[in-house]
Image 1 (tube, one colour):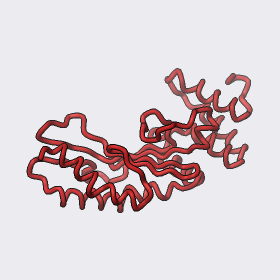
Image 2: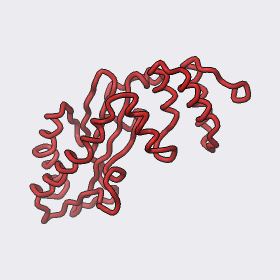
Image 3: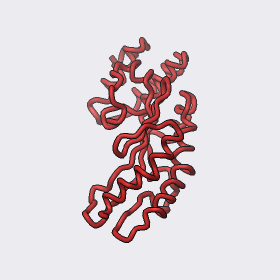
Image 4: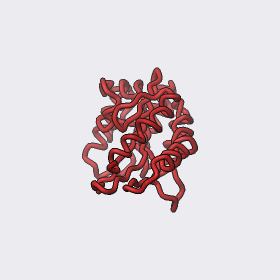
Length: 209
């Protein structure tokens, strides 16, 4: 059996049942769990340099909010499995969550014991991935995680909308001013913030208009 086929077999026979127990649905290499608001997307990301003889992959994740998407004027997707087209609140994965220098990916070759590999993947899901996403079950915990991740690993603009949805206009206004004060060379950065502020009815300083 080719490594890629072994990978597909592992997902179907070993990994899918674990996700099903936790309420996730599967499509290909992507697993999605929807709540009334928060949506969890966990996906198995293949290496770019895979060959016929070797197949590598890692585990990444995204946490999204239906209410946040609606608040910022983005349509709710018909298909949550198409994660590349959805704006997430949190983006992370095994590469960020597992302490360095422990490896954050897996490899399959012709001599790989698929049972042993599946046990390793399931262990990482139960000990690292699931506990991480399960704690992100409210706006407060998501804001706390955004603060922990910091400016270079997360989008602080999400905090504007999250505080607004928590009916904390004062903090939403404070985060707006904080985001506007950040120097960012991306030409879309400031217009995006101003668009969010206008949608939420926040006060925009005259010098920022």
